[in-house]
Length: 79
Image (cartoon, rainbow, N blue to C red; front, top):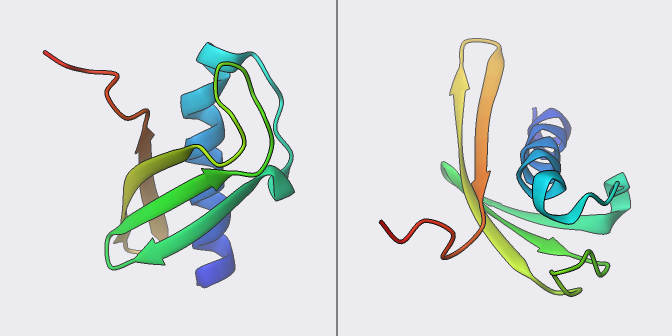
């Protein structure tokens, strides 16, 4: 379960960042810390405008045999 969840979290992070960075990130370029229903993902490389060490937050849920994950850029939506 955990390896598949980590993969899903990293995919959510990549899909969140790509429209901004236009950078292709490798699997090793993001580290993940899981908590119950939430996660923190830290960049291990620079991906302009984000620097190595940048932190993204997100949520995850298990629905039957599937995981639903969502990541967001901090401060991106101030409305």
